[in-house]
Image (cartoon, rainbow, N blue to C red; front, side, top):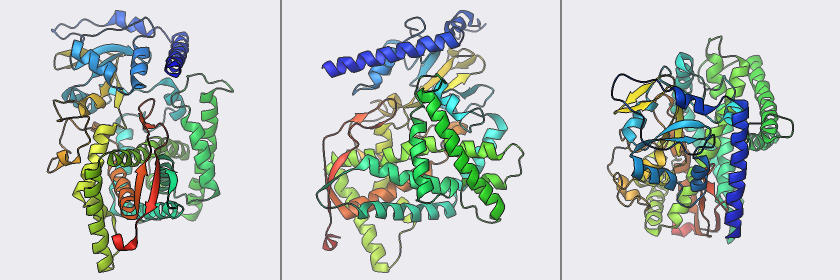
Length: 487
């Protein structure tokens, strides 16, 4: 109890400091509240409260996010004010949406209506030229180039080979009745796969340097927006400079040796082939680091949470194991290697991944800033306000899913998830995550090799949901290798 109280006061203290700094370094956000333009029609601001001056309702939001019911802040206000309501979080007046239709409209809007919104520390780290921040035709072009490459059969073949190799190397080190940490193992595997796909970096000294600098870099994503020597944001920016220097070296090597004229090996090749003058070496290097942010966290957390939920649901684990064992036997009998389409062809495995995405809510939501007054379903979103599409409440809404807090992969049998408004684990619209298919592929490969080679007993652990989703104790399990004749 004392630890809980101490933690709460630390959160309150840090949050208070954060907003004092925000207040000192910017004009008062509440000035925008006094200048909401009056519309001639009947559109009004959603119901809600703006909370305390300057701090708003951020302390309540963060306190809820750290609890075992992280959506309680949102859900309590949804019951009082409706699916769309106003608040004031992270230093800005905000319209919060748990309405799938409203959120879909906003996410599909172009930059004339909404642009990305991130905390100040994150925008400092990414820079103005980041693909996560730029807008308009240039953003669509880069997104299209990368998205097409990520969907290519060539890259899926490469990802499959790399993932199989790195998974095998990792699992070869495991010993019977040994405790391993799934979260650490999946992070290491996923980072190596990602670095290979982005910049063709193989395991070795440079990979270890990149990992070390990246860990320092991501510590600044949710830090105080203070850029002075000794601060976390300053250290993270220095780490990014060192990573960018490494990527520059790789780019220069590619230019000297020549860019492949046919099949691109990595994302750098794809961007270097484009003739646009805007795609400078500096911009490409910066964006390779920024693209590691969603990929480094989301994929390993997806794999880790799948093991967590399967450990708690023996029936699902048994059916998943049987499905994957059947595929393994078939390929062995035919003397054929497993290819990427084999992994994605397993229906129950895909249902397990889908259900993990729904329950895990690795991306709790996305934020946008309104560039003009917007009217949606009778609601007003004023110019300059933030819009927060909160996916977690939609994914755990009993009106959309029976027994929403129960892990139930069978609910996805014969369901079309692509056209569903109520399932958006990777965001949506023009900024839909281009790597969503690769995330599924990597998770499918890991689950296949894990369940067909090992039995395990999971130790007690809990899910932490803020500032990012992760396991509190890194998901420790005791493993035991399956006997060959049990295949």
